[in-house]
Length: 129
Image (cartoon, rainbow, N blue to C red; front, side):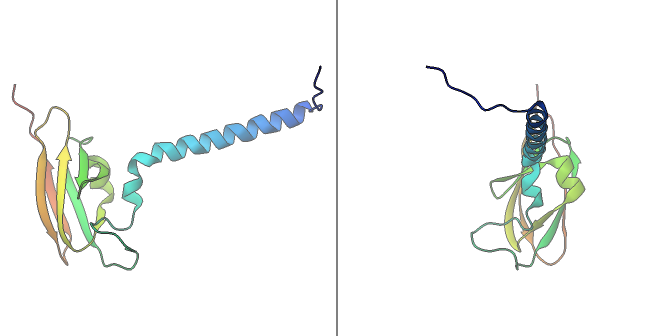
């Protein structure tokens, strides 16, 4: 038994392939941004609930190595160079900030986010030989 297929023009096939490529390109761009998606969140803080109308405190970081991973309250925020460039909005209160990179001694500090911006200088020390 043979199954008949409807005839599809070359231009329809080409248009469908072009649309598929555009969707794949957009999906790839979205996936590339997923690593820094946490930085797009308006407020980082512990606890649940709606944080859209919550007052926030600015966290700024400086230091290195640039690709070290920044974690706030056990949530990965992104690489140190991105956090340094963009900052992070914190809910007021206590937060644990950690910075780690392979081959370096981890850095960890509990901070109190109040009215003023919080500025942290972080320079990871290499592991001893």
